[in-house]
Length: 425
Image (cartoon, rainbow, N blue to C red):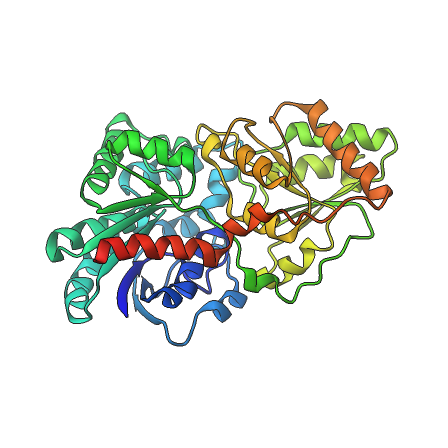
């Protein structure tokens, strides 16, 4: 069996979307003749923990851990001991101290605060790659400093290297929060260009992202979307929910879905008995707006992060699943990880985002729901009203489109294995 070394910052018990992609690839790669070896930090500072994901890590998978030093933890001392990096980014009204911290993060640590792990990681892995007969190296970012490890290992060992972009790099809209200087932006582009030049294969999660990265690097970029794990849904009973509940599951950073809130208010005023629930890490501005509104606070509720295994059961207790994209320059290429689990649940999806992007195309192909632009209140109202009426008539059907199957993790891993086979041949 050939060996693939996967260098990833996120690994269980880390929760959230960042861990899912390569956790699932590692789960299914042995079925296609590839033995995954994981290299990950021993003490990462991830924001969400989900111990239930550990069950997906086979005891046969070798996981190599190396301590990491992350300077960004000084934020906890400057702000408060419980603060997180994303809390600073999410704040709408940023004070001078917050702006200073974000500026330092963006302009001193390039490409990100995990860059100090690159040198010790390369030192350890240079010998590890040769002594363990590694056939292919994979790096996955963000954090994009993981790609710098791959870049140095490529130069030092000559082993084939696949660089996987789960999000953009130099064009990432998140950078707008860090007050980057023009020199720093150029530095990001230069580092990204080196990665794109020397990686044997580059992959990403959507066609739009592939087009953007391809133009930046003047090279081929392969698309392997995120997906859902069939095994997660095997023991989940599919049934129609008794109550009409709209649920959003997952992170909402700085975005406030104003048009959705307006639509909910107007429909509630018209007499529709709606329930809306946001589950996960939600920005405080959105929570505050809802709690200060006498109408919305009785309709919309918030629940903190819950384990993935509980989320799977919640899908079947939901009438409509809500998906809100970032409303950023990268939005056309946004295909959030939760979208694919939404698909697998069979529940109708109401998406808010660009109607001409990859998400819109996937929704249409799978006949999985509707999408409205961010500012289109009337479209959002119309879709919710239609779903509400269908639910009242017990006619809100479970989606069983055959197109959904192509997004299963096992099927996607088969495609990845073909790429690895071509690299390692």
